[in-house]
Image 1: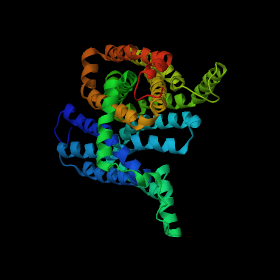
Image 2: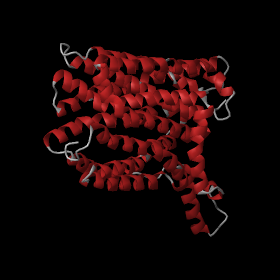
Image 3: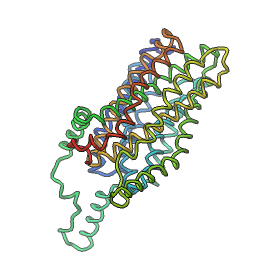
Image 4: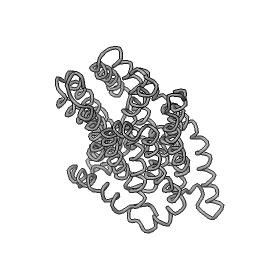
Length: 418
């Protein structure tokens, strides 16, 4: 804002354009990974992510920053969409719970650690070092990906095996199933762009769960500005101190991951009860993935009310931070439950369901920061947080409703597993 002489709203457009790129990218990159494999998409995406950091680091005006940030998000979005497919490649269905919890938490732990690191960088150097640091880190990651990350997508591995066998045997009839696919890359991409919206339009469960997770994403990104307003205005924190307050959300997210064994045992208890009632051995229902989301839906409004109504100067600063711990726990439990439910309930359209989720989340994540600071200044810290809590209360029943009646709803769905 100081260097480019722009308003706070215009400066926030850098974050907004980045999140828009994150939301649009999965519909393009996920189907490409099913043609060319996970590894080429990861390496090319991370390479372009690195390249688009350069104009952000050397920008001489806000327009350059906003455009570069969009392509930065578009490039990096592979790790929010394709990575879910990699988890599915590496683990069997009954092993998915813990890896999906870690995968679900990772995209949120990053944005929480970012302000903590960024607070020190911007307090003691200048804003350009934010991007220099990201370039160093993404360069290290790119190198490690090139040398350590193998291909995991089974159809592509079979294609490589078929090519090798044709060379060794001379038998040109040896072909992998993926080589017999007649659809074009362009046609597949177009379908992947349309189907997420079909799911949102026709599937009640997809729409409501995506809206709930989008609300949480919007609140998390809104906090990037709101924490500064609250902790600078109430406790006169410096920039690096405001960054450290985000560790509250981080601790809550890590604690939620630590609760995974409890929910894992509950999942197997539900499976065993289903067996006792006459179901096939080891059989499951997608709704068995939702208990973490039910608990998370309760924790989120508690954390938001706690954070809001303890944000007084006479209340020690650690108390509202503890409220953010509860919010962080609820966020990860909700996302973990929703992600695994969507993958399990829509096995043939999992990529489209997650792309729909990513799109709606990114819309909220992109727009909430644009009004968050003004909302906290106009309504006051207590009522602004309460407004967010009331919105989450409206959405709170849906994970339980779908846990209770999801099987009945899936019977009438043309996309969900019945």
